Length: 252
Image: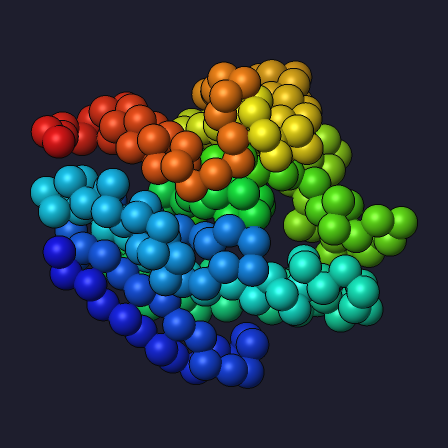
């Protein structure tokens, strides 16, 4: 497997940012780390390992990006506007700087995925920019920003809260047609530490049904916890189905 490490200055953030890629061929998969995580966590928790069959056969290539959650979503005592404004800078780093760097041609679209907070980021990026992402695979995600910003309202909070901005999006917005022609997969367990994620996923499930947006919302068993052991099983299971739906033949 070809593994590439990149450290590059971000104009949006005014600092060096890092990421790693795994593989050189296949459908690109943008990976967000879990809360406060780093770009190398996906490898360290063996998510790259369980996907290696897809990578080695040139079916997918992973782009594992870095987060700044400790300065934004996790800094609960920090100034709320500063936190969400910094997150927005990070959003533009990903969209305006990193994606153009890893995109092989101007029309290439990405699968976007992540676990836990990474699932939130994946959902947020997908629903904000469905022109860039053809598939969402969110595992144990939370989909409303207010959880991290209680009793605080700000236009940037709304812009980064998929449940809220989708509820208010005009029926004639062109993104609705894009959503209906994309692949949306959300999965959550019903076991330990999944309660809030389960509730948020159910809300998104009901909202997407109300808006007539097809989505595969999968609820795993009461033994399925908020844990890497389950996410490793889920990511392989769903990746097989995503590739089949995309017309990509695989043998693992």
